[in-house]
Amino acid sequence: MLDLEVVPERSLGNEQWEFALGMPLAQAISILQKHCRIIKNVQVLYSEQTPLSHDLILNLTQDGIKLLFDATNQRLKVKIVDFREGGGVHFNSQAIAPTIEQIDQSFGATHPGVYNAAEQLFHLNFRGLSFSFQLDSWNEAPKYEPNFAMGLASLQIPHGAMVKRMHIYTGNNLQETRAPVMPLACFLGNIYAECVDVLRDRAGPLGLKLRLLTAACGPGVMTDAKVRSIERSIYFGDSCQDVLGALGSPHKVFYKSEDKMKIHSPSPHKQVPSKCNDYFFNYFTLGVDILFDSTSHLVKKFWDQIQELLGHPMEKPVVLHRSSSANNTNPFGSTFCFGLQRMIFEVMQNNHIASVTLYGAPRTTGQARPESSSSSH
Image (cartoon, one colour):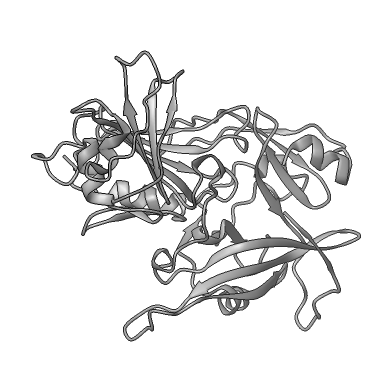
């Protein structure tokens, strides 16, 4: 059983972990992985055909909890606790049932609730918190007769009526709620990308300009510390030292052991093995992977909309199967890689863009960075 503390308009959690509104999806998954012995049978729900039109959901099936994340910014928007599923969620303690009287005692006064006849649910709303009561045996809407001595029980909810579902969200209206900005407690010393622009000239991309969000952390940090926005740019031809100076240390460094795309290279030396491996800097919180060749130089919507902006590729796509000895299954299936203006667009079967790879020739020593314009993506 999960013994959780509810903070309206903020969080659901305990002393070990907390699901806070505005938390990034990756951080929530990290919590679930760390506590996999306690939190089991977690489902990831999403729309295959329209992934940006529906929320991403982490469904804790054993505990009756659903975490809804905004599909675009992937921050936690709504938390749903179902008191009848799983049987493992209780209110305050196992000895106290989540009745209307208990809600009144715990959260105090609110406005009269709203009865939904189609769902046979009675919704009682606080700021950032909503409770739904199941009224299966009712044939008409509950009546509101003020009785100051009885508090919320004067809404004529049947004796012993139990809470079926609870929502935690931001604002006064559940239907209009949006994922809030990321709380300071969620930064944990990391830097996050608010926006990534492609720097380009008429020939194609030159690099990336990133608008980054950072928050102070560590001992002695004031409680009123605020998020700070900074801008950094990286270009093709930058050394790994240049990238480290601009973005800081990566979360991981990955060394390539093979290059499955090399067979499609027109170069005559494509089958000649290299003495050194290319490697990636993985910046997970920025959503950016940076590829360096063995000499330490950077080489690095809808598909229909991309083609309207940039034109159509001249060659057929390369079919990419994301599988290896460590990962022989891929829920997204095969993807198509189209080359266009020094960019490789990986397109999923639902016509959405899975990834964009930028590439360019490295600069010679002492060569200045070129003039550029930027476009957001």
